Image: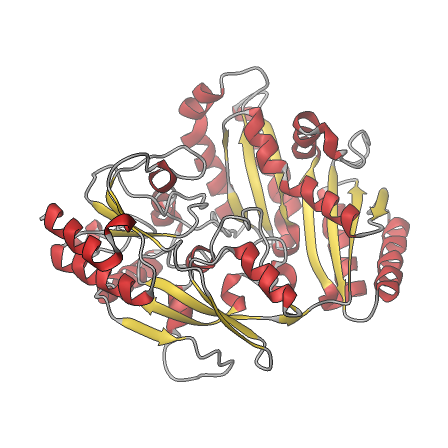
Length: 478
């Protein structure tokens, strides 16, 4: 049957675009290089119709399909399992910009378009597409939507879901749902678009999307502030909301150890205030102004003056130009790379109500330090929307591999139990994939799990789309 299916796939997408031999690590290994699967074949369709035909062939053969965009995910949700029986469906060849509707402020694109290409295309047309994250040079919009990606501008523009007006989707049966009209108002039944976004390819395969565009800001300013505590960072966020309103587009917090890793492994980046003992945290703020740079700078300076007087900022610098602003953002975006240089680590992508973040960090830091003396905490993230990357590094000089083997499950349990105690979520923007499927079953309510399984069973009764990801189905199929 597998040989017959592979022949069918070759007839659909072309023999050159069905890969079964050679180095397939780009498709079979996750971005963090912690998991490796084995595909029956990698199919690379060039059109929505080809995707539909591939799905029909796999459905007829009872063969599971794993959709994949840029393969930059962090929850092991877009690589095949180890069975060698799944078809990896790569959407990277489907990368066309279908069109820009300037009056409607929308852009319609294929799912395989790289995020940075969308940003640059929008900017050339005089618009802003605000989704922005560290992997934007290689991640694709289909993957961004499938995981409901967040990034650094969620505070102003929302997650990927809020930036999408319509989708084109291939169903598990190989039908094509065309929903890319770009309407802002369409109250005609269930919102299938929102159902597909964040479903990680388990309910349908996103092949195209209509996205929101915004006018380019007249000015964009960036500031870097040293703060005495996380409580002061939250206070600064409140002042920023008051002074800047909707023009506050980014508010990132970074712990001193996280920045110390950047300073250690990338000293050329010159981290501001790294030697300031009175500043255990730094904040990166972005203000996008619709009037002028002079207006933006005046509002920024008024904000910082108030913050200095309130004692929630110890020192600050405002970027004088775009080059300096990019340098500051580059420091923030380099934290994960610097952490990787330091060695294997345990990552947590969590969200907590902003008001409770300082208490969560204080309590959980102390808990982990009691459990594992010398453990190092790499705490940074999108404070403006309550999303922290609360990562755990082995004690200095220790065996990183042994640290993961001996402590990862225990640390995850401690952190996620604390997240639940503080009314948070164990996955803020990275998704569930296969990495956190057990955590979903522990921390999601039974009612919610039953509803999710009912949706999965109703749309994908064969369970052929990304099985074993997000929701485990054998519990009701056994």
